[in-house]
Length: 522
Image (cartoon, rainbow, N blue to C red):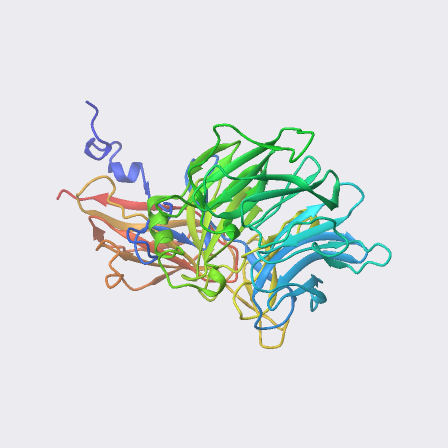
């Protein structure tokens, strides 16, 4: 049997802990034991990645939010997407309460281009099949399209108007699907209707198939790879293009029924062939699910599930329009995030798809992260990711930038685009650490390996009583601009958790915390 390192005799006159310095563990996925954000290890306004050379976890500050454009103060965002229409030139399309449809202009007030139903959130789809250069969008009660104007047409038209033949009436499930030239929409009776091939202006009454494997309510529709996915309350149906000569081209994928439904259509997101959503089963227990290459999995952890359960639609008083959740996806800096926001809790959970870690993201004022719907760079510009606010505070649209370019958030003033910058607070609550032994540890020095910027500081405090909120020590400050940031005289402990806090308008990257720590004998 090998001897533990701490029990080996010293070599060259050095204690084992001096020969092999320890590092304080920084990263653990969101791990609250009671469904709140007040206990246990977590990262707030940050994310983690592995150092490819050392294998250690590195903590990065989340992207910043720059002011991009504004509309009317006090509005609530209902959806945004990159449109890239050329006549008229509309780069980004956004909808707000009470049903105003805007064209977003960088750095200026948004331009009102029409009115739509303002009761529910919207889903969007870029439609370029055939000769149409179009964006379609819909919510529960209305469906619309915005096209490069044809002679005699206004820019924005209702799908149920005279320019569209045979379009089904609502109410509708959330979302569109597009497969092999056909545009699909699902009504509240589980009927999936399809357009003519490469012609969204004509809908045949026979081009319909029912997602009727189970008798539950229609929630959402989306495309996934070469499939059409129909989300219902307690189940999910999968369809493929069977090339039927009559009726709907779609047919059900045999044996592919998923016994999980969808809590709310606004939680469905697709990114790089991964479909994520807030799933709900017959027991009405919400969990976050992922579909990748038709492989279904639950990606939420027990702590996340406990949080979701507290704020699902079955366990809280009804919100306006029964809209409890918003979601968006963000791809930046080699990471892909699924952002799930609870309006009831005023909290955003960020899931790192590649590292399979959950984190908490907030705005600079401690509210939910305002990126509740997003327009990707595909049509908003080569490097611009736009986000839309949801709370009735500022009417701002945000440009999402990596922290090394924009390390602060835009906070709107009372006069439209007159915003100020505020640094979001990064909070690192570490796992409770005992060094693998109950023996007391004497922590003489902590050495912080972090990005060095003038004015960048880090606050540190600890807790030796299982994260008890009343037992945190006082904060001490570390100057991260120094060549070797050090925190001396950290006392002794058996088990300890740390809280590190960064709130500066600078980038932040914490690579490791090296320890000069000695083991006691008791």
